[in-house]
Image 1 (cartoon, rainbow, N blue to C red):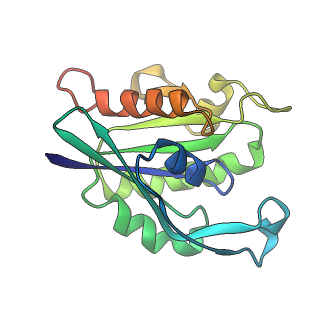
Image 2 (tube, helix red, strand yellow):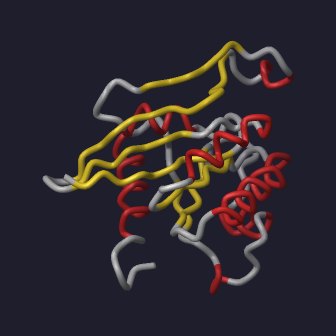
Amino acid sequence: MKNMRLVVTGTVGAGKSTFVRTASEIEVVQIERTVTDEISIDKEETTVAFDFGKVTFGPDIDLHIYGTPGQSRFDFMWDILIQDAQTYILLVAAHRPNDFPYARSILSFMEQRVEIPMIIGLTHMDCSGALSSEEITLQLGYVSESNRPPIVTVNPNLRTSVLSTLMTSMELLIPGNA
């Protein structure tokens, strides 16, 4: 059995912990604490180290899924978690355009550390004020389709949506698909 690592990163409230919980076939390890700062408006708890889950792909692959904290004060965990990863997913909440510059900085952080396939997962596309995928990718700095990673819409609460996103990410590891 081959173990592979996928990292789910993104801004606070983009759906990282929910994504890991929905995907995992095992009880998820979540290292969270009660929120004590300005993000308490949006949620009661926040990831402070990582979330960990696992899903099996056929008889040969155990995919270890690590969700990063969303706050930059925990970026040392981003650095640890992205090492040895085969691929990653940047989750972006489509209805929170004020978070796009921060999502872009997370993307830059990851790109400075690894050269691995990645996809962008757009969450909250069904919410009021959600921008289109084209607008979001431009805000993230992808002005040309030639350098744009795959972009998917994902609902972190729906297992079929999450598994489809995982499959899209895993397909990038197949020669000729990246």
